[in-house]
Image 1 (tube, rainbow, N blue to C red):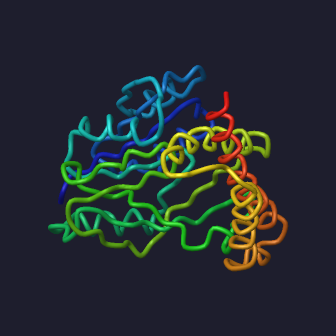
Image 2 (cartoon, rainbow, N blue to C red):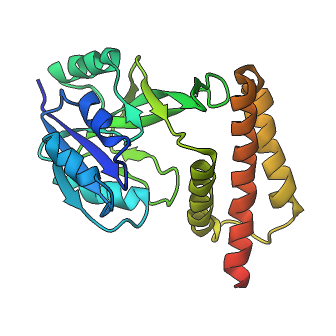
Length: 247
């Protein structure tokens, strides 16, 4: 069986880190990549037997690409602190690694939870490449929502991980504002003059996409709130880009 390193990026995740580590306890190495947390994240991770390395946080892709070469083993399972690997997915990963994997990376779908409920439709078909070969994969250089670029083919696992991004509305909006700030940097070179199209049409379509096309209305109030906040995030991206250009 191919040996596995689990990588968990953290920044003040004392409320998440223990369960995250427990969910990847089957890995041969657990590497916590910490952004100099000021809470008990590092202490808890070390108590759980994880190896902790630290670096100032720039943005997600940069942090992950710095950590990947430091993994002891060739196969990597990357997990955000608010994600968990259920038993069914664990068994599938072990099965893949028991033989020679046919792909350089694998898509894993996510079951998303928000406001204490599973959001089945609003974030439908949400998937990420999280199981991959250390020497054949790196994250694209984007500030937000960067994905793995693999040298070879990418397969797909059948079982899903769970993802609970919600702590509080205030914390979630703060996260969206932070992402909007970073996305303004990514969009600066490819977006022309900021117009009503960017501030009204694109946010409106984002709400329509999540609430109607993906049938977020079937998720009740959490689906409506997520759809509204996704539209808000799009508008803030362009507002922050305008501010960046006119500061």
